Length: 345
Image 1 (cartoon, helix red, strand yellow):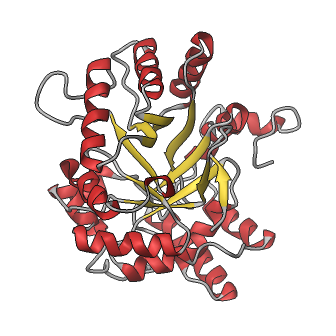
Image 2 (cartoon, rainbow, N blue to C red; image 1 turned 120 degrees about the vertical axis):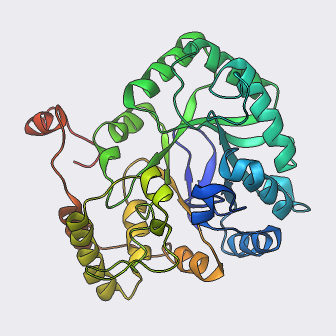
């Protein structure tokens, strides 16, 4: 397993990490992802560790805390320093007025509760699950800095921030000398390349490593979706809740990308998901790609995305198939690449 630095920090993470969104299966959204129990989770963790993947990502809202609890049971008895545990909080977790957001009150409670569910004394990477505009950025960052100094968190990250959200936070941390965000868990896939327009250049400039979520386009790049054919029985896209909660992808655009993936998969002797994941691993600023799996077969297939690389010509073909018109001002800036290059240029 290849390891990379997490942004501009000195922390090394595997290029593939394992997401626990399938653990628990509680609620309309997460039941569509999977319903892995403790016994299955232990086996999946074993397979990951055997392959050199030792980073496991969760969140408090995944199955209402059950995913963190199951992960905690699955890693019990293993040397803690051999594991990298990341989790997230910010979204509503309880009915009270203060059981949501990134206030000092909620963050302190969320971290303490996550530590208890995970059965650990510290979290390697703690990420804000989304931007909360209500508390001052200073309140958020000073709280997180104190949690780092208390030894409860090792590294800080965010998820689903816009460019100005992230840059304002980084500038504020620099101003006061507080702990900086070194990771951004962001949606990025061959059918979702918005990340490249602003967040990638920002990450490159500011030394923020990207941890990619839903690298297979919310279940669309599994190799099982085909033009004119019904959805597979196991697809999360059969759940309207899951469809509405995830990124929207025009059908013709999707199948244009799938056709290109099929061609490259045939040339390389790899599967469509392996090709889609490998493409991401060659993109600038990507530190780790989160893979999920309902079962051992899916996990082992996804682990096959490492140890080889697409050729430059194959990458270019996938780039061309997945390219879309950029929104303003990015299409305008493209005319001045010689003075305003992106990490992809």
